[in-house]
Figure (cartoon, helix red, strand yellow):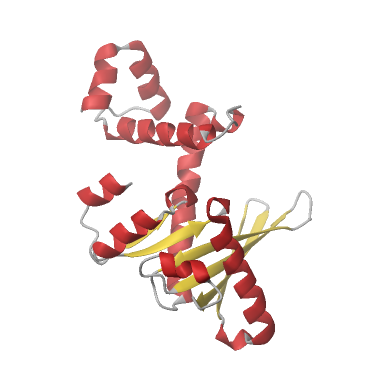
Amino acid sequence: MLVLLDTLNINGALISVDAMNTQKKIADKIINRGADYVLCVKNNHRELRNEIAACFTKVSRDTPEYLARYEETDAGRGRTEVRRYRQLRANEWITESAHWQGLQTVIEVERERHTSKTGEPSREKHYYISSLPPDVKLIAGAIRSHWEVENKVHWVLDVTFNEDDSRIRAGDGAENVAVIRRFALNLARLHSLKDSMRSKLKQAGWSDKFRSEIIFG
């Protein structure tokens, strides 16, 4: 990711990454190159995630007027999803924020899904950090766009690599293999052959010449 950022002109851009790339050195690079970030925080930064969750709980109870809120709903194919965004300035309750260059705000997203099959709602919460000042609608758009890209990539990976059937679980194996699959997917996409992804990868397995073209361009 650091090498990729060095190759791009990101000045003035808003960069969003998944939890695997939520790293202090990546935040540093984004800020130093004149861009802003929205970074997903999961259990790979457990202390930061817990501090953010606790801060939202406290502010919701004591000073809810400090929360910026936005809500949106998507419906289709027998499914309805409601997303509730809440944004808050990072404060002294989030001690970890001092270690992230440029961090200004934290974000909580609650996703509530309803399906016509079960009728039972499912809920999950996600947390983010951002170098942007409070602008919850802008943040919502960035997070939604990131999810849309992730969903498209996941669909291709599942269809092409049967990713959902993978039995790799030990250590960092699943994340490492996911990175390799995405790298292979992007290399294959860059090849000029107009064919399906599955067909390209099959040909790469059959032909040393075609595989070299994909890898080396």
